[in-house]
Image (spheres, rainbow, N blue to C red):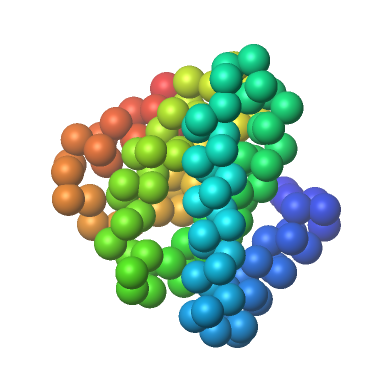
Length: 128
């Protein structure tokens, strides 16, 4: 059960991604990629302070799953995004990021993976 604090931002993200056009979606995805990139580049001791941004970016990516799965050029980049930005969070010492990674992986579990090992690895992390 998600609280209003969680569903309101999710609804806004979906609305922006669905009704505000490809340009707005592209800008928003670029912003999310910059959050992921900054988090990945951060020193380990800084990651806890950046975790709310990563959590929010994962929430946004998961909330946009239905739109991204059918929209070029995003639909062809989803597997790489999962491997680069979701999979590592299953090893995070922060429980909220592990939980969010599991949720995001579930949102994209039905995409066609080009590498079946990537799918198996994600699913193994979820059930572990």
